[in-house]
Length: 542
Image (tube, rainbow, N blue to C red; front, side, top):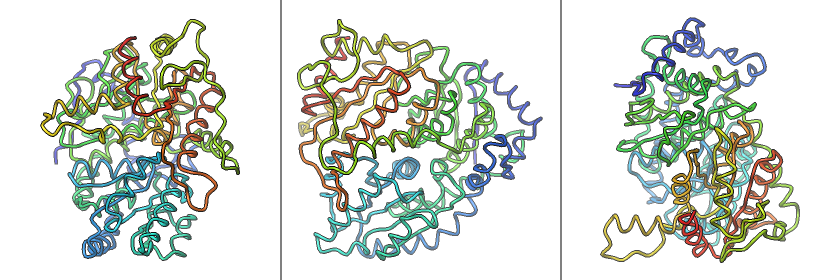
C-alpha cells in the first residue's frame, strides 16, 4: 500500500524534518506505538492510559466483524434499506466519510433541527433501521432522536426493538436502556475516545449496514500500522511533526483540501479530530474547511491532492490512523493533552440551564436592529444600521492572526430541497442551491478579508470546533445564525421540542463565547428561506 507524506513547501519540509529528528531522538515514535501514556505529561497520563486503544483497532476491531455481518444479513433479509444514524461528533463524521467514499447511502442525524429530522422520518419509515450511537450514552441530541423514532415506529405499528441498534460503551446508561428495551447492542472499545473512534463499532456498524466494505478499511489500517513503530518512513510522525512545527511557528490555521480526491468529506472528520484535540489552554490548531487558502503567514495547507503545504496520500482506512497518530504527536509538541475536551461541557450546561423545566421559548431579549426578515442581536457600533454594516463591523473586529467563525443552527440540507427546473444543467442546479445555502456566506465573507473564515452547522460543531472556540487562542469573532421554526417536533418524555432545544443550544454556546469577551453577533431569520437569501444579498454588498 502506498501511504506517503509529501511537501510542496520547502520551508514546511525543513521544519518537519527537524521536528521528526527531535521526536525520534526522544523515542516518541516507539513509545507511542507501544501505547506509552506518559508522552503528554503527568497531568494527562491517567486519561491517556485509557485513550490509546485506537492504535490497535486494525486488529481488535476484527472481533466485531462476525457480529456486524449477522446484523447486516438480518437487515438485508428484512429489506431495511434506509439506514439512519443518530450520533454526534466522531460517531457521525467517520461513518459519513466512509459511506460517501464508498458511494452508499446513509442518512446522518447530527442535528436538532426539526425540519431535517422530519425529512428523515418521512423517508421509508417502514424500511428504516436506526443506529443510535453515543459513547457516553447521555448525548442530548442522540437521546432526542431515539425517543422520536421510538414513538414514530410505535405509531406505525412497528416494534422499535426490531429496528433500533445501539452502539455505546460498556456500562453506559444507553446500554442499560437498550437492554431493557430489547434493542440490539454492539459495544465499542471503551479505551478509545469519540473523535478517535472511526475504526471502532461507532464507525463500522452504520457503515456496514449502509453497504460499505469495513473489512477493507481495517486491512488498509493494518497495512500502515507497522510504519508507525519507528522514526524513519513513518507517515504519522512526519505529518504530526509538520502540524506541530507549523503551529509553533505561528501557522496555526490548517487549511484542509480534498479536491479531485476519491475520498469524500475527509476534511470534516479531520476538523473535529484536530480542533477538539488541540484547542485548549489557549493553544491549538484551527482547521479551515471549505475555503480557499489566503496564502497568509498563519496558514498551513494540507490534505489530499494538494500541491502546496503537506500532501497526505493513501486509502481511507490508513488516513484515519495516520491523522489520529499525527494529532497525538502534534498535541505533544504543543504541550497539551490531545485526549480531553475540558470546555465542551460549558455549552451543554448552559443549554440545560436555558431549557430549565418549563416549556416556554428561551429568552432572547430585543434585537439591536431588524433588516427585513433578519433580526440582529448583539453589541454593534452606533453607525451600523443594516446587515452589510453588521458584516463589515465583524470583519473589522477580527484581530491579527484571528478568524471569523460562522455558526448556523439551521437545516443543513434545506437548500437541496429547493425546486429546480427539470431541464437545468448541473452548473445551474449548483448555482440554485448555492443561492439558498447559508454555507455560501463563508465564501462571500472570506473574499472580503485576509483572515480565515470557518463555517459550522450547529449543534454539530459543538462536538468539533466548539472546543477550540472556547479553549484555544482567544482571537475568534463569531457570527451565529438561528431561524424561526414553522413545524416543530416534540421530544417524547421531555418537556421540550426539538426547536426549543436547538435554540437553547445556540444561546448556550453564545453565552459561553460572550463570557470570554469575544465579539459575537446572532442573526435570527424570522423567515428562513427569505432570510438566507437576504443574508447572501447583504454579504455581496460588503
